[in-house]
Length: 145
Image (cartoon, rainbow, N blue to C red; front, side, top):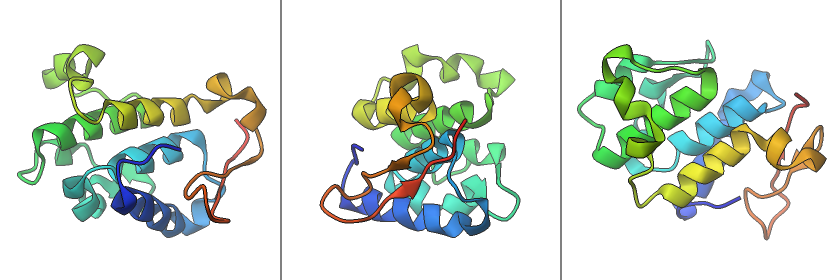
């Protein structure tokens, strides 16, 4: 897995662990949490973006004051990949043309790869993803689709 920085790697691991009772991690949650932990603003406000108890995104958080240009792009992509969410009033902003105009393009594409991993990486179906830390034994149990 490609991480933006070490803080991203750590925050993703913590977010996966915080899900707790939802394990194993499916491609929807892996992508969502990977993307939402990519930027400092979304890491700092993760609980305002995703309800860990209910397992639901919080769409209103897209318009919150903490969001930056890049973090809102990552949030839009994360929400869309999670359950197809598109804010009808901002539909244009959810298109790849606007989303991928970011220095976080590599991270965003990794989020897409995680979400569609059964199609990108058919050999990963039903096995563990080793990649939170390539040099350690950390892994994310990945559910079969």
